[in-house]
Image 1 (cartoon, rainbow, N blue to C red):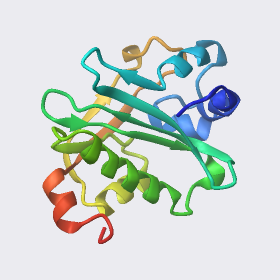
Image 2 (cartoon, rainbow, N blue to C red):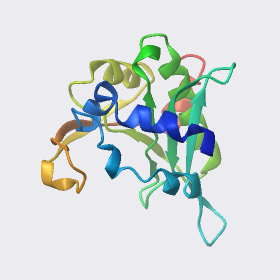
Image 3 (spheres, one colour):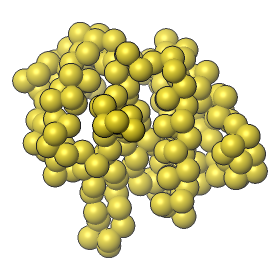
Length: 179
C-alpha cells in the first residue's frame, strides 16, 4: 500500500519526464498538479458492498528501496480490469516489470472472480511495454488516442495507445510460469 513514507518517491516518479512521457506528459507532471495526500486515502478503495475497487501499491526491492508504483482496478461491467505499473528509469530493462505485471495479472484474476480479462493500454511508442504484454499472452484488441484536451492537468500532450488484453482462460491455460 501507499504510505506517507512513499509520497516523496511518488513525486519523483510522476515528475520524471522519462516515466511520464509514456502517458502523455513529456515534461512529467507539474508538481502543483499533484495532490499527494489524496493518494494516501485512496490507497485501497472499498466500495459500500465491501468489494475492493482498487489498490495502489508502492513497488520496492527486498531491501525497501522504492522503485515504482502499481495499481489494480476492479473490473468494469464487461469484466475487464486495468492495472498500471510505473518504474523509475534506473530499474528499466532488468526484468522487474515482467515479474510485477505477472503478479498484477495473478492478483486481478484471484481478487476478482468476475474478471474475465486484464487490459493494458501502452503508448504506441513504448515498444518495451508492448513486447512485455505480448510475451505474457496479451493480444491487441484495438487502439485509441487521448487528445490534449482530455486532461485538465497542464502539460498533457495527448497520447496514442494500443488496447491489449489477456483473457482469464489464456492465463490459466498457459499458466503464469510458462509465459
